[in-house]
Image 1 (cartoon, rainbow, N blue to C red):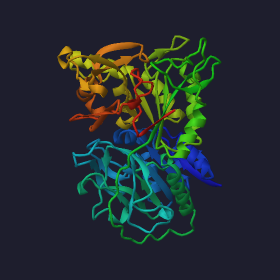
Image 2 (image 1 turned 180 degrees about the vertical axis):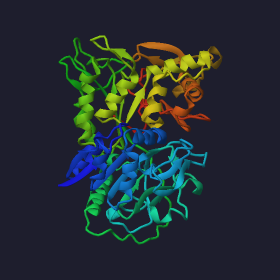
Image 3 (image 1 turned 30 degrees about the horizontal axis):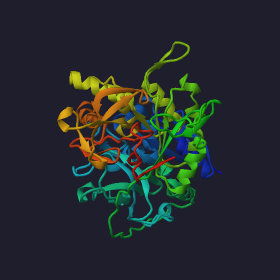
Image 4 (image 1 turned 60 degrees about the horizontal axis):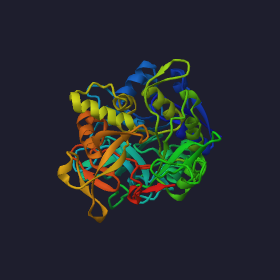
Length: 492
């Protein structure tokens, strides 16, 4: 069994990485002190969130200089995502703050404005070295999961570090997707969230790390370009049934019970088993939507256990939505939405989906035009990064006879009918004077640093906005239209 030291500075979900390492046959030792870094033989450093928070935490914990010394010692190291970016001299994300400075260069913004930022999803690699770590990976074919807003580019000064590059948009956007120099390796993608390919790469890294001699990695050529793939996301509505068990269900007009008198909650299977099945069938991501407020105290939440068990077997991104809000527990203790999100991240979630609070935040900004940082979207994003928050909306069709009948955005649907999509809150039980289009537009102004530019999807209607993308995951949509489950989403 290979012993690895895991450096967790306290941000984001590393449970999946732990599970992936256990799957690869590792004995994991957590880094708690600077001496733990000095005594490590194989060190893994995952990172999510912002460059500044990462480096600040390394300094606060007294890890910065010991980590820098470790990297220069010739021992095995693997940095993941922000763990790779921290190896550079600095980042435009936090100007003036020095990184570890092991790799020449400054991490910068994507320069091609025609593509969405962050770069999020499954992309492949142009492998530029014949390295043992990549021995089982097919260049330009095998895909890995990326989620990042900043990137490092290949230069003459750091070319000897570059193991692979990945394309996104035009040539100016091509970025370093993995590094290797001696025993120091790193990747911009998340192997622990990249399914079978990621597990293969982790195993190859561990094999490489235990070699007696430093592997030679001669340069190789790789012609062609990589391409971001379309994603298939399995969306599972989860709630308690009458026996108190969590089940996956699906409703009609929010009614999830069987039609006969006294009908029970429709049971389509157990959440963990279905998530595993969808992952095995090729789903690129799994989303759990908690459609009832069964959660009492956060620490006792059944969904936490669902996430923990799912992350033991499902190595693709996990998103959780529903109930992520401020609340007071049964003992009178206040918990912020950030506290709730933290519990979910620690249990295995990679993203949280904000529904009702996104509507409230949009309404507040619409009336005040002030960004005060108080919304749960802003609070969670500031700690865990923009990529960790998804805005979801549960829309209801409102039919009209003429576009002049309402100030809301009206579209023509089947049979020539006209309607607008009204935002709902509280699981669809309450409607608001806000349409889904306006939510996208207002959110682009009110939380612009926290949402993404590109395409908004509502009931299979593509809405192009100029500054933002809000990913809208539709579950038991109140319009009950078949188009609500478009071809890139699985639905139970």
